[in-house]
Length: 227
Image 1 (cartoon, helix red, strand yellow):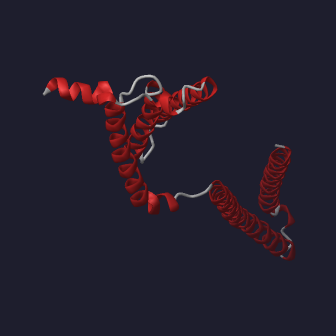
Image 2: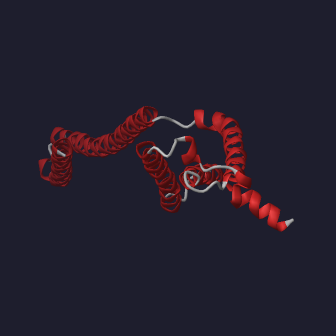
């Protein structure tokens, strides 16, 4: 039983090697041998590349499909290398088993690919990602501008409130001065004059701060444009 099975796998049961079909023409034999060897080695290199990709890209969401595809490629490479062996040795039983395994792997991979196709189709392209990034940057710029305008609005409201208080002091003090002058008590206007002077100094300080802030914003804008 085992002897018959071994003979079926490795002995070829009287079958001739593939080179016999090529009439042992050296050019044809070596063309087949070198071509199948190159194809087989290339097939074996693909799973190695996929292993490196899988190790470095741990975020891959189709990992089972990647390994299934790698198994299919390995079986294909083994088939080509066995084709080289069968040029001289009729191990067609082993070759047949590998071909059967290749068929199972290829059908499984094809079915898995068809089931995964809808997921592949929703993956955004490079152009779509670029458009999304551009839209995101535009939204961020608009948000920053809106926040800046909101801050300027709050600043303007605060400045208007401060100036209104200062103007009320000045207007009230001027009214007191007019009242004292009308009553002939010019010596009593010093308090009102001092209040006006204080309010004027506060207004001057506020204006200096506004100018400094404006200069800072201008410089930041120039630097941003330069960058």
